[in-house]
Image (cartoon, rainbow, N blue to C red; front, top):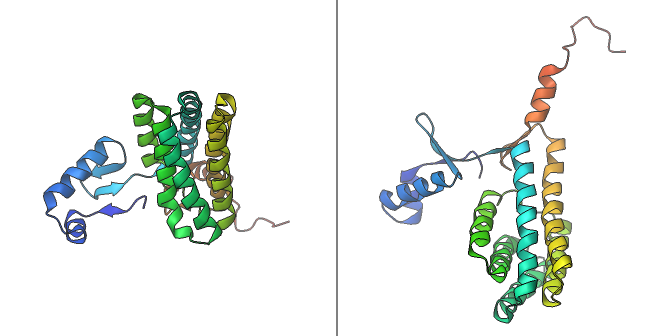
Length: 219
């Protein structure tokens, strides 16, 4: 969870390991920008501002679109079979209301989709972005979950058909739509640390707004 402190001892106890591998894992995450380490608070999960979230979503949409285009071009039948298997599991979970399974299945779907693009540089970039935006792309509302898996199915159909343009457009739109749902939530709350984003735009607007004096009329 964004902003949460990562205490080495507690994590080591929970995982049943010594502190050394936990310390190394935190170091790796910090080097990738997923964890920040300070002298006062120690290690904690990084939070993104609304602007940072918006920019990250735009970049991921661009790269996911290009990856889907390449997947349609490469048309690797073995990888496509793996994507179909994940899609079937996800669609079944949605139909049966097993929404708690969808976060992991969503990650699997996008990992296999990245593999279908057969571009290691692009795949590495997407992996980093997926990790960085995990909290941004984790819808909990059933209606959003159903729509997300319908969009997954449409992307895969375009890839199987070898339609590069549609595959790219659908994949980019999928990311932007999910990101828009997330960013729209920022308009209903000044600060949402459990989602990992602070709405600094509202903070700035509040600071600039003239203060009402106690004796001022409310009319």
